Amino acid sequence: MAGSRVTFPPMAGSETLEIAIDRAACRGAGECVFRAERTFVLDDEDCAKLISADGDSEEVVLAAARACPNFAIAVSRGGVRLV
Ligand code: SF4
Image 1 (cartoon, rainbow, N blue to C red):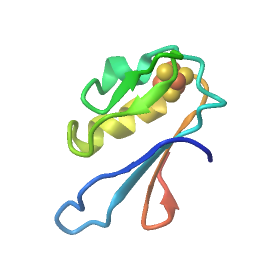
Image 2: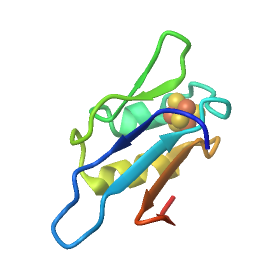
Image 3: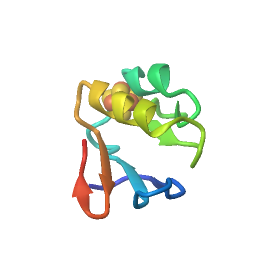
Image 4: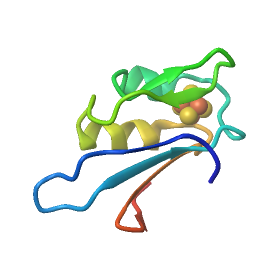
């Protein structure tokens, strides 16, 4: 998946969470920004961009990724895709 990537600090007892945005798939609907405003913003091209490594909880980030209508956000941990 192409796009920007940010790595969250590992949580206790878990491996690092990785988030990637497929800019080609993003349509700027803003659902991710609405749900996790400390993690995602829309850039000048109305495409989602990652802004913080620790702005929102893992639960919030996962919910935001699941809410993307274009399946443009991938979240993985330890090489296992969660969303
Ligand atoms: S919800 Fe999906 S399509 Fe909408 S801005 Fe976020 S990544 Fe892009």
